[in-house]
Amino acid sequence: MKDKMKVAVGISGGVDSAMAALILQNKGYEVIGLTMAIWDDSIPISQSTKSGCFGPGEKDDLAAAAEISRKLGIEHHIIKLKDEYRENVLSYFCNTYTKGKTPNPCLVCNQRMKFGLLPAKAKEAGIEFDYFATGHYVRINYDNELKRNQLLRAVDLSKDQSYFLAFLAQSQLQHLLFPLGELSKQEIKNFAIKMGYSELAKKQESQDFLESDDISVLFDKDDYRSGDVVDHHGKLLGQHKGIINFTIGQRRNIGIAGFPEPYYVIEIDGANNRVVLGPKSYLYRSVCTATNINWLSIPNPKKVFTAKAKIRLQHEPAECIVTAIEDNKLKVEFTEAQLSITPGQGIVFYDGDIVLAGGFIDA
Image 1 (cartoon, helix red, strand yellow):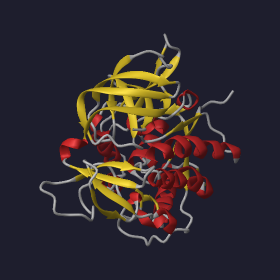
Image 2: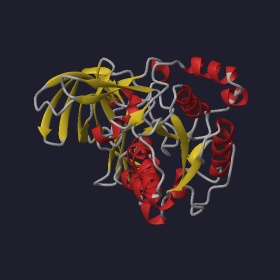
Image 3: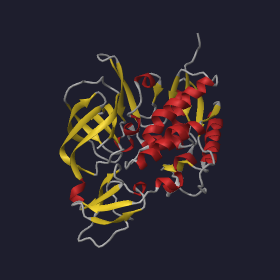
Image 4: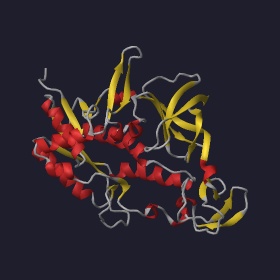
């Protein structure tokens, strides 16, 4: 019988994952580090000061992860997942935009890559461990009555990342550890400074999906099909150069001016390659549908239930009534109209701190 449980920690090169590893070491676990390599040099992105998951700056992140692991005194393994990232994340991102919806690559990356293929490929390579951990700010609780692991919001709600992890499976939750879920960001920074990681505590952290402000580098010329721009009454206003240039709620760079009041993108009609503009009041909706439902902390109740739903990361969860339309489709009716409900984005349902389920806004 082995003396210690072994935990593989996803080391990103930042303070959160480093301190997650250190906390687990202090609790007596044997810790190793895993970092995924996804950049493949296939896209014309020049390295810039913009931080992003996908781009040539990855080499700096890999070096930082290796240095953190060296300082912690742990094994560090780089898992190459370039082809898998293209198949699972980049393809999803581009396909969603070309359908007139706005993707959320972080949701898919967490589900399929960070918590899916990263630990799976590590084990395929012969790297053994009992648990996988990351520096995400979330908590896990086991419900004895439901006999089910539940994902909970972090104690520090300002850093809560449960929205991004709502598509994890029960089979994943039972092998996960989240050491930072009970702590605040400031506590983690203070701990890092105390333990001799001052520079890491000061490191810039905001990280986008792409190391570029120009997502057009991901698309082919064929993805840019011109089409009509109309107003909320159906009046033709002009032409656009591709629906991939637009998202719900957008006001800038619409390419059409001269309105009596500010106009926004209120609808993207992917089937007809059409963009609809209108006043801000038209952005408020009370009803939406969601598909690809992942029942996380509870089994599918198969009945009408009330919850609070979050329609994007910075959205305050709002009260709603949820009704099953089909096995994998829900109707969501908000008590109060919500601003910019955006097809393609994730919608996450909560009961207090408990993440009930996640899905993708369909319409």
